[in-house]
Amino acid sequence: MANELSNRFNGMFHDWDHFFNDFNHLMPAFNVENQQLKSDVVDLDDHYEVSIDVPGINKKDINLNYQGDTLTVTATKHASNTEKDDEGNVITRERTAGRVQRNYYLPDVTLDKIKAHVDDGVLNITLPKSENSHKQQITID
Image 1: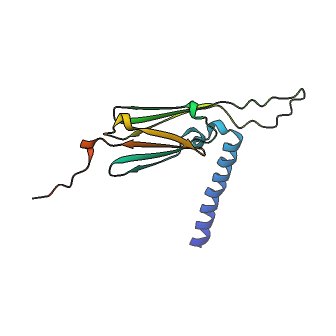
Image 2: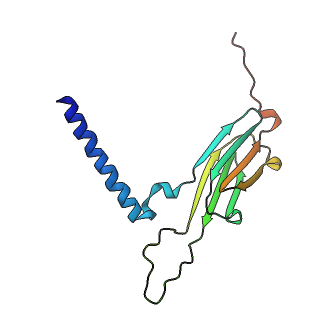
Image 3: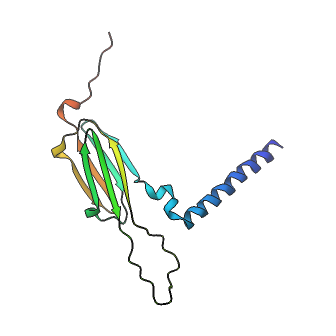
């Protein structure tokens, strides 16, 4: 009996997930996943490495700024230029334009040594740490 109730309960949430996933496909502008830059951030001893997915975004449409221990990445995606014919034969238009921005708190970076490049739709940023930012083990008395 408990298993049957658990299965029905899980099934109800499964149905809701399908409903909202279908809604997101119909209304992509409301899909939160489309509104955020997906990234990996790694803190190594002497530098940070940030990798951000930027598929379909030209590198000239990506802006990087480092100020106040914060890396700000802004990317702009332009709308497709799909033209309708005289009969209006465009069935759906899901590739929309927009601007996304993400901030990363990465303290003690040497500004003039930051490097960035885009390769296969991934923006890779290396941010070397300043000399005085290395961690030091503290001995407890």
